Image (cartoon, rainbow, N blue to C red):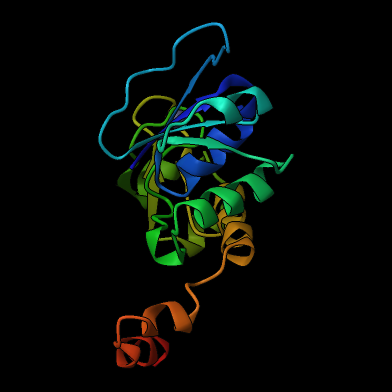
Length: 169
Ligand SMILES: [Zn+2]
């Protein structure tokens, strides 16, 4: 799934990347035509004028902070925590992270982090290191709190309540 995010929502784009989604920032203008629809690609803005554009791939958000906006995107697209892929993409560059051995992190992370983590994840572009417990990972934890799992009643509608139960086990 890919997102094209309006420039003022650059903070949301960063959070979507931390969730594992491909999120690019572009300028939306009511006077210009929007990018053509593409498979599995959604446009995101907060400009109320875009409510008039009838496009299924256009999300016009109401929330005014990244945390609320991520929750809104998840709700509108019926995504759940299972769609999260934490520590897979750089929040700044949008590049996919690659696992690196602990030795690569020597001197680049606090000592206690170096000694407690066996593996780190690195952005091939900016070389930033990510690990469980790092600031971006804590943002993901907040996102997991902000979004809900699909309610069991939704899963039951097609008569497969047993799958909802086994998920909880
Ligand atoms: Zn990066």
